[in-house]
Structure formats: C-alpha cells, structure tokens
Image 1 (cartoon, rainbow, N blue to C red):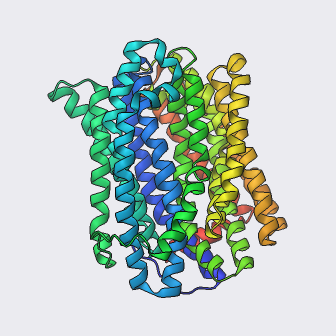
Image 2: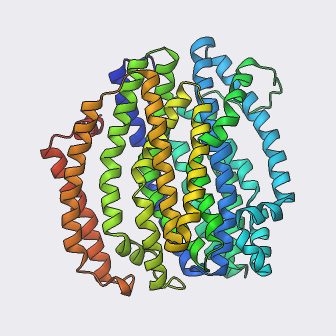
Length: 527
C-alpha cells in the first residue's frame, strides 16, 4: 500500500501519520506475534539457564548496534536529509543521495563487522563482565557473538533503504522485514537442532545472520519500483552526504538510549545469579510488543511528516503533529500498560512456562516486567520527541540528554540491584527513560513554542479513566486462572477473555468519553 505524500496541510499530515502508523502497526503486530512464537520456542529449548544467558547477551550485541547504526542513527540522519534533498533538488538528486549513502555505509559496515569479530572477546568482557568468571559461559558467548556479528551489516542497510521507502510513502515492506527474522530463528532452532544435530544456541545464531540477508532482499523489488538502484556510487564528496554525516554520530547515541540503558541492565545482571539476564530479556520482549506496534510504528510514520513540516518552517504545524502523535500513542500505551501490569503473570505463564522455563522463571520474569511496564509511557513518548528533534536536524540535544539518562540508569542500577536484584535494574531503566523524555519534551516545546496543553491533558485524562475501568475488570477475571500450571486450556481461555473483553471495555469507554482517537481511527478505517 502506498500513501500519497504530496504537499499537505497539517490536518492532512495528521491523517497521513495515522494511515502510515496503521500500516506499520499492522505489520509490526504480525512481527510481534511471530516474535512471541519465537520466544516461546526459545524458552522451551533454552529456558533461563547458562545457554540462554549466553545467547541473549550475544544477541544483545548486534541488536544494540542495530539500534545505534541502523534504526537510531541512519534513519535519523538519512530521512530528514533525503526529504530535504527531494524538496530542494528533485527526485534524481534524492536517488543519487540514496545510492551514495548505501555505498558509503556498506564500506563502513564491512569495517565495523570485521573489527567486531576480531575484538569480540573484549566486547563480551565489557558487556557481560560477570561471565568472565565462568570460562565455558564466556567462551560460548564469544562464539555466538561472532556468528551473529554480520547481522549488523545487513540490517543496517535494511534500515537505510527502509528510510528511503518510508520517505516515499512505502511503509509495508520495511515494517514486514522483522517477520523474516522471527521465521528464520524458528526454522533454525526447529530444523537445524533436529536434523543437523546442532545445539539450539548455534542454530539460533546462524539463523539470525541469515535473517539479515533475507530482510535486505525483501526491500529490493520495492526499491526497483521507486527507481532506486543500489549500483555503487563513490562520490563521497556529495554535499547532502556530508550533511547526513554531521547528523549521524550524535544520532547514533541519542536515538538508541533505550537499548543502551537495557544494555547497562544486562551488564549489571551478569553479576547477579544465573537466570537474571534471561528474566530481563523475556520481560523486555513483552514490553517491546506495545512499544513496537504503537510507539516505534508511529515514530517511523511520523518522521517523514515532521521532516516535511520542519523543512517548510511550519513550527505550529510541527507542534500540532507532536501533540497529535503523543496523544495517539497514549491511547494505545496507557491501556497496554494497565493490561501488562495486571496480567503479567498470566501472560508469561501461558506464553513461556513449559520445557526448561519453570514457574520460578515466570515469577521472576513477571517481577522485572512490572518495573519495565511502569516506564512504557516514557519509552513510547521518547520515540516521538526524539524523532521531532531529528526532523529539526538536531541530533546533538538528544545525544547530551541521553548520555545523562545513561548515567542516571547506571547509578540507580548500582544502587537498586542489591535490594531489588534484577527488578531494581528494570526500575532503573524506567526512571532513566522518564528523565530522558521529560527533559527532551520541555526543551522541544520551548524551542517550537507551540503545544496544545489543555487538549493533551483532557485526552490523557479520558484515556486513563477508560483504562482504569478496564483494569478493574481484569483484576476480577484474572483470578479464575491457575497460573502456576502454565499453559492449560482453562488458563488460555481465561487469558483470552481478559484480553478480548478488556479491549472491548476500553474501546466502549473511550467511545462514551468521546476520545478523539476513536474518530481518527474510524476515519482511517473508512478509507
């Protein structure tokens, strides 16, 4: 599906954001569902033991680099520059920028991948210092990391070409790409473990690298339709590329603060008892569900629109788009937060509790999930305000504030990890995200001098009331399940009723309270 992205007034931009977020959200939903199936299978084969800890740390490293070099930096630096080039110089110059950027990025990424493979022992020593005391665990983590390092090369190029496609109104293929990662990992652990007699850790690691290549190949036909060739172009002195380069470095850190903070949690968790890294991983995966479907989807959809408004100097329109995006995110993330907090044990029990994943693992993962979910509003809002700074071609402000957030996370993690164990690390990440969001939000509003405060507060109040009514229902119905038994027909039915009826109750309350987001979504569905 391709959206019309000709010059539009602010109202049309809001509608375009909603449409694009719907497209991205749909494919992201499928990705998250397949991701849960993937994690269920991983839980069966790995549980939360030594092998699981090694794989999750190894997988965290290319994932962090993906956020730093791909989704965080390349998108933030490329999309505003690409749109500005299209508006100022025309489509041929925009295509030229895309080709040069892909060529230059490929060379840099080859070097990063090679250095990463060479210095993997040192990287693992920094990321998981607690593993060094267990030679077998440390050695396994190094091997798995080296297998997966080429993934950063492929997925970074995916992010770059996806940015070009998003800027041209094509959102489906980039949003659908992560599904291939999940399918590849599922196939890897089921097929390679059984037929090639590989251990699950190695099967999963090779599947991750293969998935990076598959995701890049998926974008190829859509690039051809837009007339974008990936033929190498070595004109590295091209002025737009230089402008893009000036945005890249600060964006690489500022745009990936959430992953940096999660990584800090992983580092500290490696010093805690066995299983702590895995419990944080599974909890983080559950938080990533609403975060990916709503916040990241909306952020990806909003960046091109915000960049167009910023490029035309329409700061009032930009302020309205920011307010609209935050209200739309709140409409999904507030009830999602209530649902995750109330149903955290039932969800984890039904999804993961089988095989090597025990009820103890369910309780410990639920403990981490509670504190992660408390910060879902901040994680989600951060995506919007960060993208707003990127649309203004300001990547330095998010950089400095995010560095402050990392310090807050590290300091609180060291303080809280003793009394609260891995739950304290999750809480530290939440507080750091709240600090990051609130400081950036205040700076942003002062800069653009426009934000619909009363409209925002009224919308948040209505959403909170509707979510509270839903939460009361969930608390009552939740107790009909026996969650220590894991996946049973009764537990699955009770959880299904909670989710489906809970969503219906929230939707009915939102409609009765006349939440504006209901009208926006209905107008899009009628298209």
